Image: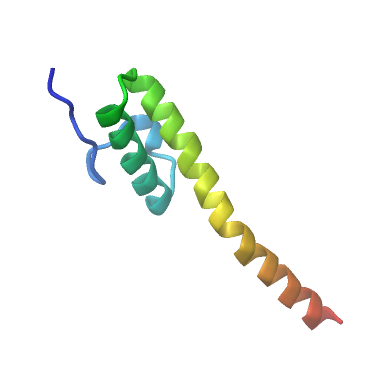
Length: 76
């Protein structure tokens, strides 16, 4: 059986709602899971979306914290 790699223009439907950067990360993760693990396609898609969202949120947290601090200082 030939493994099909997903790309930014060919990806699973559940990834449509992700932002382009989060989708790119989800595609990267899903492709790695399918290549390294003997994993069901749907499970790989679900796990990759969860992990990509977690990484995006973790990356955004420091930026939001900095903006919040800056806004608080301007209000004082």
